[in-house]
Every structure is written in structure tokens, then in C-alpha cells.
Length: 249
Picture 1 (tube, one colour):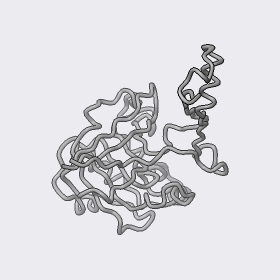
Picture 2: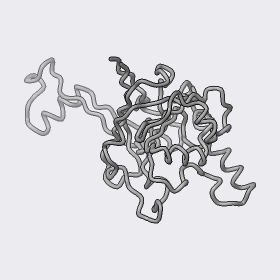
Picture 3: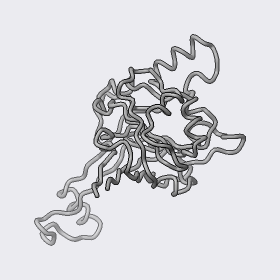
Picture 4: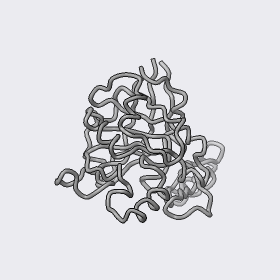
């Protein structure tokens, strides 16, 4: 079998990026590690191999929604179906290892959200409960660039609801977000003056997860593979980073 990494790298972002979007990582060298060992334990560098100590990395800034991540229902609203929404650490592990299918949306323009009919027409096979549905847009080619946030067709609330009705609890996309780009949603919401236009698919009031900012979906067949996408167990978290891997026979 082949293991295909569908996760974006976690790396230092440019300093000019807004705080809410930026990841900052501090790297400690082997020399700094040797100094720490001497300070803590009194073991001098000459007692270490090549006078080197451990290396460590510290996240100075790393949001749970940075890089490839799984959104929990708690991210969308405080209640789902009239009950307290579940955070990431309370979701069943069974959701995150299942057969995957691809919905190809590489032909769709930015902001041209997929309807339920669109999804049905593009599915390679009939869905089974707990399948993981991944929407391939090709926008991962722009991952790490400032314009990435503004790209992607998005998935409608109607399509999200239809997937949920088929028993799907985890759905993902290789764009910045599951809904159409935020700036397009914002304009539509302000023009309509109605609730439920901005962030429509997120706030569809359903107990489901999204995987956002996937990569390499183009390397997958449309069906016949498994997806492992276990999120980190962050207590009370609205999301968590995940190493998403496709298992292809």
C-alpha cells in the first residue's frame, strides 16, 4: 500500500502576516541545548557527543486552525441541535479512520459553491455512513501564499446538509475554508441583510467535522482508499491540527 500525506507543513510564516493567521516557531540549536543541559544538570558540553545537546522547538504562536486541521462542532456555534456543541476532544475516534471518496471541483470558479446536486453528480460511488468526503479544488497549489485565503469554490449549506443526511460526519477540502471565501460571503451577507448567509455551511446546525487546508488530493484516486485524520486531543478545543494521511492499496 501507499501512504499519501494530505497535510500541509507547519512552518514559520512571514512576519508581515496578521497575528491571527501567522505561525511563529522558535528553534533551539544543539549548542543551545548543550548550554541548557549544563545549566540544569551541570553536565559540561565535553561530556556530550560532539559537544551537542538536544534541539527543541517552541510554538510562540500557533492557532488550532493554522495548517491542516479538523474543525469541531464547537467551532461553529455553542449549541448544535439545541444541545451543547462538542469540542474536538469529545468526538468519537471512529469518525477519523474511514473509507474516503473524492468530489472533484477543480472546474469550479472561486466562490462558485457546490450544491447538493453538484456533489451527487460528482461522487464516484454511492456513499456509506461515516465515509470521509474530500473536495478537490486544486487550490492547495497556492498554500502558503497570501492569496490562498481568497481562493476556492466552497461547499453550500445545502450540500453539507445532504452529506450529513447520508451519514457523513467528516468532510474536507483543499482550500482555506469549507464555505466559499470569506470576503465573498461577507459581501453577500451585507447586501442581503439576513442571518445565515455568512458562514452558511459552518453554521448549518449539524454535528459534523470539516478538514480544512488539505494538500495533495490530486495524488489520490477518486475512490478505493482509506483516510486517517486523527486530530490532537485539545481539551475544549474548537479545532486541532491533524496529520491527514490517505492509505491507498
